[in-house]
Image 1 (cartoon, rainbow, N blue to C red):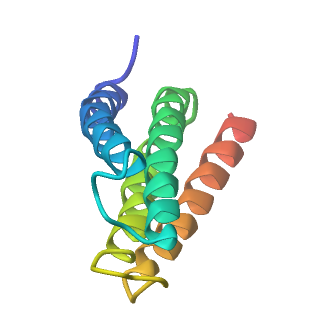
Image 2: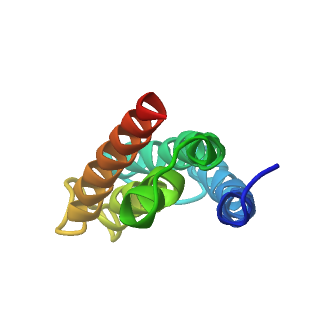
Length: 134
């Protein structure tokens, strides 16, 4: 049986899959040439979509595994939900940093990607140590 926190976190994670699916339909429009983009923008669109899917899947696993630890407070939140939040930040970093016409390099929004990467690292390390300690 999942804790209430894990069930809520996993439920939110599952709901976000609908947005990833919608992003996939947009990606299909890009690949078909229906949306004008530079090669850089196409690469970032693919990367943002792929990271969202993989990290939400990992986040669902982490939400369940966090129940096997005794982590509470911020460490508990990192273990349970940090990967899902990092999925949003990393994907947003890819998408927002490549928005605009004829963009060929990332703008300042790339900082979201790095913030998400730091959160991802902190989250999986916290969960990993919490599982080993349990």
